[in-house]
Image (cartoon, rainbow, N blue to C red; front, side, top):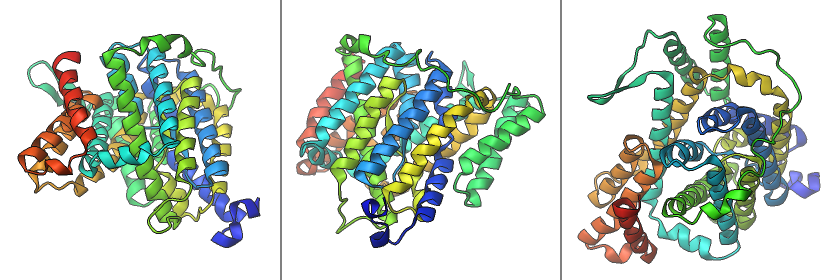
Length: 431
């Protein structure tokens, strides 16, 4: 094992890698409870999604560790799960089984792309400014969902939204959770979001705002409600909405994965001459994990930037991921705790994740309007339009248009011009 992961060459050990794997797990363990909470809003069985989330994370992370040999963990992605539940299922009225079929196909396309040079073409076609805007927009969308579920933001027939009732006990618990989670993050706790959820749940139980679980450990719940449910709905994908959904799922996963892999490996010192060794294996692991996750019953599985927490703790090899994968399997026995993860407990996690994702706003060229306006429309329309795909569509329409106005039409990749017409049609006639 030491020779396989090159412990001596990379200057690491079993203990160092194990601590790193535990650190990564604690940093992203919140997804075990947040993902079922979000997807249950789409009508999916919460316990089955809990198991699907843990298994998809374990399998994807294990493949990444053993095959790509990177200290990168995977799990159902935040942002994509919100798109899946609130835009596709609730917004478009698509059955969740069909949405899972779309997820599976997006993973399959991703896998095919990793086997060809097309992946480099696509990565180069989408401008960096739009990638940054999409990440930030998804962050605002997730934060808005958190504020909404906490009751901090409420609907208003005249102004659309307004400040909620801050004296409501559940809202007060969510605000407390936000403050506590922020404290852990500010103090640099690697599992700050997870610890914040634990403290919020305990306080909620004490003040009778969160139900007391019947137990802590029990057998793993059944996967039957979600396992393989997409198979009978593949023929429903050939509609204009579902084709856009598949493209959006692929787009978010593809660039989120590429960005995360670069960020984590750079921090671990694994980049060589600015290039990522075994990039094909790493991307393949991500795409296979998405297909496995869709089969089990969860939204897109992707690489987690929280893996940098494990790298900071000393993780340098795939053995870190092996440890993290094992911990996800053990976590499957703690399903009784799902009952304590109410909206007041998950809302702070959503808001903090939104803050983290919105940090990419700092890198947008706001003083150059050909970039600023498309980026702004992408970011603002995701929460206001309650749709990630709507934000992406507007950004992809305005960017080539304004680059032509600026006289920079040669800097725009031909693929972007094709997407311009696709999204004009989509928003004008196909949406």
